[in-house]
Image (cartoon, rainbow, N blue to C red):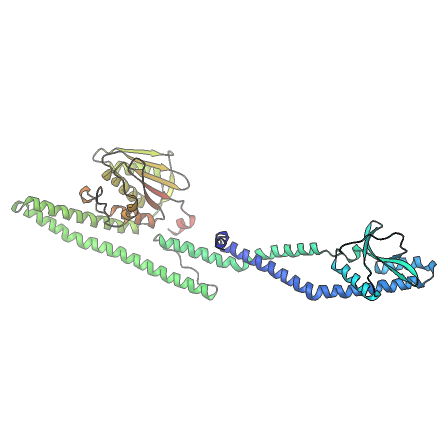
Length: 450
């Protein structure tokens, strides 16, 4: 039975509708079965016994009245009770089973009242299907019968009506029972997605059943705590950057003054370390500012990427090949964050590409995909996710000797997550690394809340 979860619909609404449909069908079948067993069948048996008694009484009355009056009696019998009596002329064909339980009840009652088997057998009469019983009363052989239309039931129509009512009732009930719940779940899911991207969603409405109110209250409390944690993180990063940069500046000035009185190589090493620390602090401070900056604008990605490539290659010649899929690609997004992400990726590709050409491509569609490719030594497959951790370095190609601080890709991932984008690294055929920046379409609700 392990395959059952795989067949279950993924939507709460569809699951609720399916459960209600099964429940209503089972309920209808059980009710119909109970009504049929305890009400319809006993009534049918009683009605069949009454009809059998009427048939025998009519046959005795027909045998006792004078022959001239029998035709009028027969007409009145047909008009009042749907029965006919006639003299048998040919034998009736045998039948294995009767089409309705009611006819079986009539046959059983006839046999019980007559004291011998008195079967009902079919024969067409005036274009209708009739069921007849042959009996002998007062030395006269006669045949009494009833039309199948007289006792026919519309059970198929009844079942169809039940199915139609169920088919109409189930969606309406599902909308009433599951509509508001699923709407709250969708609101909660969207709010959780916003929190995971560092956004600040509006508080969930604290209404509905007790469990829903508790869930909304707990989520709103968690959102406030996350917002406070993010604010404290930004304040901490900014404070550390500011407080460390001042003494570092003083140390650098002091070392410059002491350069002529001590070993220049030692002073150069200390200055280089101070420069590395200052660069890390600068990157941390820029990250805190970029995470706080959530201003979105409508920009042309083609022009933005061309400007980024021009800024990265300024001052020295860089072999960068830029290819766009369209002359323009307009999107509404955070241009500062995208500029920082692409600048870091392109600089990494240049730094670790061993002087090879760096390729930048743009695919403009409802989902934007930007690729930055290099032909460097590449990244081992088991390190493709680890390189996004702060201060993580590869032992061979990406070390401190290349000038990297170990924060570039961590900053890229943090900025991408904060804006709802996705950044990934993939190995290239024949060597090298390919960075993907995927920007999904911006929802209208996000535009309104930013």
